[in-house]
Image (cartoon, rainbow, N blue to C red):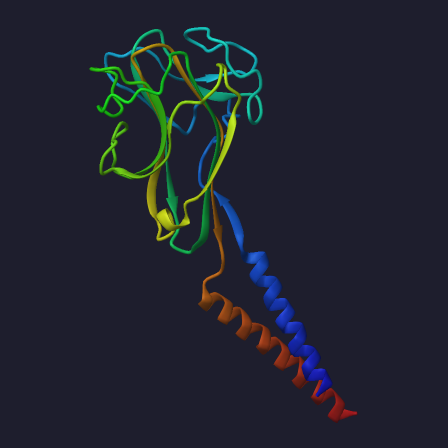
Length: 248
């Protein structure tokens, strides 16, 4: 009996370890730290007729178009993305990601600064568009897979930042973390968007260390099959030991 108990205890430990070991964290984004030395993996969109765009930038240098002072060090590594311009414009930096229906949690995190060289934020009411009344702010959103680059309506599933950084420019990177499991956990394809619009003065939205991590755990049936296999192995061992004993 003691031998059976020991075997069952060992199997339970093995099953628990297998459950832990088979859980994994999966990065759903490509080049989220911009260490490729470019914006590879990302889609950049600019409203037609405007000035500027999102570009790759190197820490310790000025912004690539207007030569404004910016963060002296990246939040992670040797590069980051930043919006820049010499006149009014509207810009978006996007990447699609797909979530499996078997995830247990999904965490969004990023480092960002929003340098508004005016006195914003200013919300003109026209959404992400620099045409019309004064309008100047940055925002971060999760969009549906089919949403357009500058959608601020039905295509926005959740907004995680709208405005500018307080304090004197240039601002340091700030770290943001959000649990988005309830939003994307059922599975599907989504878009992460960083965007800004400006028609009052220069605006630099800096982005680095962007991550969407899904934690996956084994499906219940997989664990049942694993447990059944472990019990089968234990049973065979016990039978062999009993047969060997009877032959002595």
